[in-house]
Image (tube, rainbow, N blue to C red; front, side, top):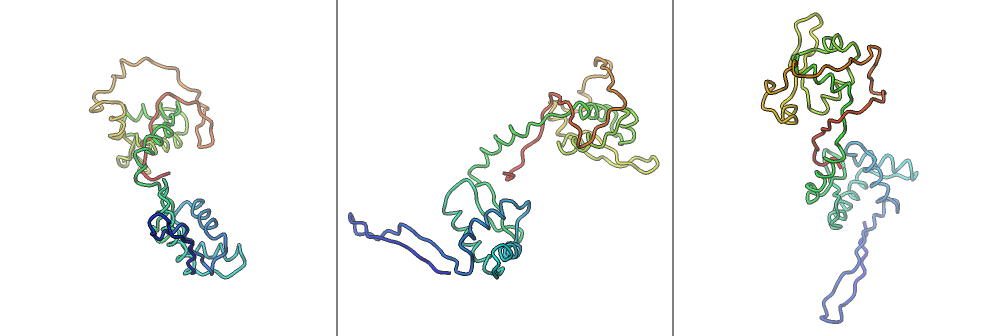
Length: 235
């Protein structure tokens, strides 16, 4: 690694000021910064120096070692830190990944909360209603009541944190049972399930067609309930 710098003397007070500093990694290709940043950005998980070295070696058709990349990455971490932007490059879990700067977390929580206000489908709402009033209830019981496949609806409700697994039924096969979560009560603004409207007070609605199937690939009509608590550092 070679350190190059350009500097001048300030004429007003004679203090030496460094105006440009640049590190050149002699064992890495000229585009190594851009290459590594692109690989890190595209990776779903922290990417290791060994993996980046392998990809860079094959792409540039030259031998690049894990040690070369690791040395360059720690330099790159310092450069991102000195930049003072909204992103940080960190060494984590044996690899490297981008994170939002802690100073921007409050800002991002506001934005993520708004963008993640995804609506629940009519199928998910119906499934949630049955669970709320008949819990604990298993998937076979739900499908017997609704007359349709409930797998996708259950998956969505679990992802939203509105329901949770409460145990297993004693019926054959010991299917998993589901119940509403504390977040369900919090979202509805009630203290307990006893505060929910009585079934006798609810207006009956027409049943959906029995041949309707809900899968992960189905484009379903959206209803007016929105939930998705934001999680930190997902940006």
